Image (spheres, rainbow, N blue to C red):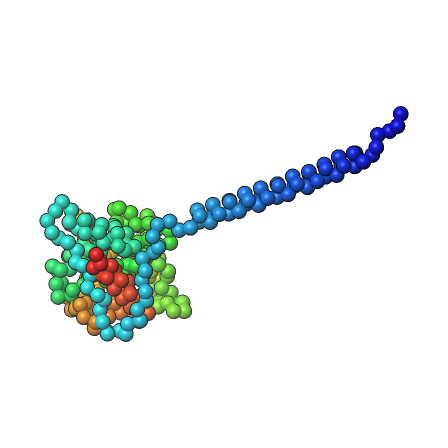
Length: 270
C-alpha cells in the first residue's frame, strides 16, 4: 500500500498554527478593549459630579480702599420661615452650606438691633468662615444640623513656631484642651481670650456660648468685628480695621474681601 502524501498533513499543521495565532490576537484585542472600557468607566466615575466649586477670584484690594459689595439683606418678611427661605435661595447661588448661611444671616439680623451703625453683613461673616474652616467643614469635620461640627475644630498650638505667634494658655485648656498653649477653636477660629471677652449665646436658652456652635461663633465674630459698635463696616476704612483686627494680615484681609464680595454679588444676581 502506498502511504498517503504528506502535503495535506503539512497544510493541516499550518492551519492549526495560523488558527492559534488568530485566536491569540483576538484575545489580545478583547483584553485591550476591556481594559480601555474599564479605564473609561473609572475616568467617568472619578469625574466630579455636579457644578464646579463656587468661584472666588482673588482681589488684591489695598487695605482701607474699599468694602465688599452690598449683599442682599436677610429677609425678615412675614411667612412661615422667612429666614430659612432666604437662606435656601442664597445657598443655591453659592457654596455656603445652608446651616452655616443661616447662622451668618441670623448674626447679621441680631447686629442690626445691637449695633445698627456697624453695618456688618452676613457676607463678611461668610468670607471669614470660608477662610477659617470652610464653613465648619474642615479636616474631616462636617457641620451638623444642630450647629456643631461632627468633631471639635481646634487649631494648631500657638507656640511661637516660625510664623506663629506665641500665646501661653489662658483658659486652662477648657476650650482648646491645651494647658500649655492657646489654640484657635471652632468654625470661626477664636482664641480663648478673645472668645471669653466677646462671646454671646445666639439661642435664648440660658446656656453658655459655645465656640464650636456656628450660631454662637457667627454672632460672637460679628460683635468682635463691630468692636462694641465703634466701627462702620460699610466703609473701606472701617471694614479693613475690623478684619485686620481679626487677623493682622493683608493677605488674609484680601482673601476675606474676595469671598465676601463674591458672595454679595451672587446674592444680588437674578
